[in-house]
Image (cartoon, rainbow, N blue to C red; front, side, top):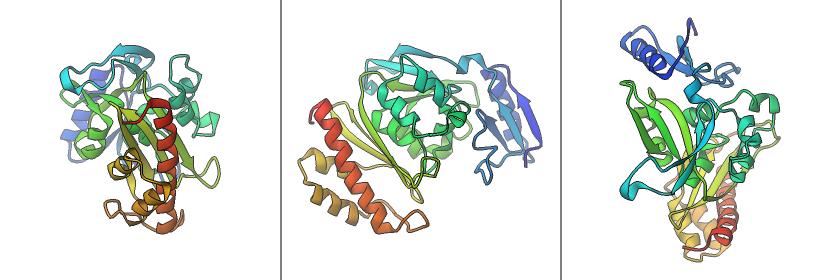
Length: 284
């Protein structure tokens, strides 16, 4: 239950408030961005103190930047830096945002919700029906994070996914998407406003095919096995068979569909999206 609301004026103040709450065993805290998750019925965020970051100017705006990392970590020469408080609608209307990111942002069908929901909030939640995370992951996107000591660091979306618990207290300052990425995505839901059973992204990162999915009941994950099969010329039937029998991903039957149905969606969508990006970006 929310008992306190703190409105931070800058990043340093927001992080300081988070540290203070963490030091108190009696208080749990969360950053408040657009509020679409915190304010919805049965939302997943449970905190007694909210630190509002909506008035922090450094978290707004978009700009083209060089890869902030150095050496072998670099995956692209130029990135679009998107402040974490940028809304889905701002991305859709941006002249700088790549088309693939606009397409993924439009998975959120409600314009009213798009005017509230932020890219940083969607990334931080990393829900199993996330609108954007699978696509950002497939594109090789980066996250600009500020830890509780005020240090800025850049982490790839894969590392953030794999070590999500260790980053839970970090403030997401920006999302960096590669300007020259070849990416495609698809979403399956009963209606435009329903929770998605599957959202998948396919991208070419450093010449390699990358497939990522957000699957209801399972979570967000990469699919290197299917990526390798398709890159090596596997047929659609071979990919479907691999998705059906792949034990590396636990798929649960629920109200969104049975295990067999979900695995079929994983296989057929992976094959279709992979062929699309490979035809645009070249094979491995």
